[in-house]
Amino acid sequence: MTELQYAFRLIAVARGKMIFGFFLACLAALSGFGLLFLSGWLIAAAAAAGLGGIVTRNLFNLFLPAAGVRFFATARILTRYGERLVTHDAVLESVRVLRARVFERLIPRSTLLTDHRSGDVLGRLVSDTEIVGQFPINALMPFGVAAICGTVSVVIISVFSLQAGLLLALALLLSGMAVPVLVGRKVDNDMERLAGLGDNFRADLVEAVQCAGDITLCGAAVRTVEALNATQSLFGKTQLRSLAWSHASRQAGAFIAALAVAGVLMIGARALQSGALSAPELPMLILGALAAMEFVSGVVPARQALARARVSIRRLMTLCEAPLPVAEAANVWEGADFTRLVMRDVRFGYAGSRKIVLEDCSLSIHAGERVGIVGPSGAGKSSLIRLLLRLEEYQSGSIHWGGANLKQLDTQALSTQISVLSQDFHLFQGSVRRNLLLARSDATDEDMWAALSSACVFEEVRLMENGLDTLVGEHGMRLSGGQARRLAVAQIILRRPRWVILDEPTEGLPPEKGRDLIAFLLAALPQATVLCITHRPEPLEFMRRVLRLEDGRLHEREGLP
Ligand SMILES: Nc1ncnc2c1ncn2[C@@H]1O[C@H](COP(=O)(O)OP(=O)(O)OP(=O)(O)O)[C@@H](O)[C@H]1O
Image (cartoon, rainbow, N blue to C red; front, side, top):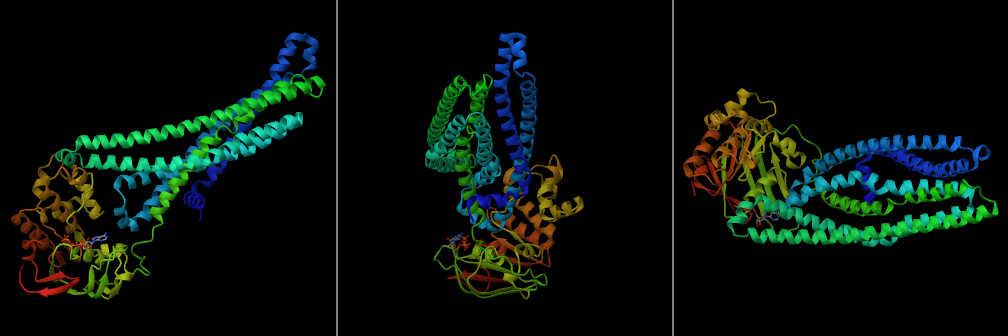
């Protein structure tokens, strides 16, 4: 599938509106042509009537061009207005649908996003979707309008003078096809380069803003600003060069238009002398040729827009069509009872990496058990969790959740039974309530306060100025580390999952606070089966069994580390 076919498929929803917008754009352009064309007749007829008195007035038909001019002037205003309205509506609709589709395709590929910088992904989601949503209007419509209206104008001018019509056709082809083809490669290279530079700049900027504090503490603030300036200045220079080319090609178009009009004037003057053309027809042809050359004035900007859109489509394709890291569940098996987790001889390595993280790794946990997993850094503990949640695909062996093969379960089905408290848990910008409702959308205020109470953060939230509606800031920045983590625990308590997976749950907390956190969680969910990965001794005090992950395998071990 070509890039353009791919883009059309994504925005097919607005096809009808775009076609209607195109139709109106052609009508508006032709009305402009008709207006100028008939103005020539009207001006000549009026001048002749003024000079020649009643006899000449009767000789020249003033009424028809005057009525035509009025008609085309009104038609141009109405069709231009309608075109703007319809095409803007089409663009808004296609961008809306496109963003939703892109996001939908990114969700199962979210693990691949770690290969991209966040500013880059943001850029793709915001600006590339906008550019792709607009491209039929900005990049294709001007070509279509030029082709249709250019042909109509050539036919009309040819009716009066074949020579003038042929000359106009040549000028339109030169300006509307030869110039865009000549600058095409240069425009493609510029757009590719500008998109790359823009990505770098945006990603650097987002990183600089997000890590402003760390950058200052490292004494790197001045260097960071200088680096940003350098990228911005390179971007500016490339943009300037591209603009210079664009203006040069527009001037070339204007020069061709001037030559075409002069040529039509000469041909018309000769035809007038020979009597093949009447006096009012000469200005009609000249103004008509001038108006016709306007049809191709948007072609060079459209060629640029097309080059930019192709870059954006390619960038969206690389994100949205990347092979899924985990095959879609062939059959969502809803009968899994989650009474047992059995993992047999699993072999796993990350895609694109030759390192084998887990080798012949086996594990069996029954409902109600509390199992700790320890092991050296890099042994594969977090990777094991990612496998159990089906965020990564293992190469061989088997994993079963209560009789259901993991490969038959999708992440949605798993999330109804399993909750995870990870080391880098995420709180969303917004209120305490919003974060709790994300965990369980139908939770009442009563449920939320009960969960906060079980997570031992009730009193702190109650004393906050707006209670449940207190804003927690991005990543929970307005909360202390302990409060944020207890809020994350409250989210798990609200969900009441059958399995709880904890990944370094007490990291960053003093031992006593860490111990309390686990105690609150386990007291609130006494029936839950718990799998806890940790380096720290406190969580292990609550585990009945401890396993050690080493050399890719899990080994049973007695007692605490
Ligand atoms: N996305 C990834 N792509 C490739 N390799 C990865 C990826 N994530 C982790 N690894 C590698 O897999 C191995 C296991 O990493 P993992 O994070 O599971 O270890 P861990 O036991 O949880 O370590 P720690 O205790 O330090 O968190 C490491 O060698 C790591 O470099």
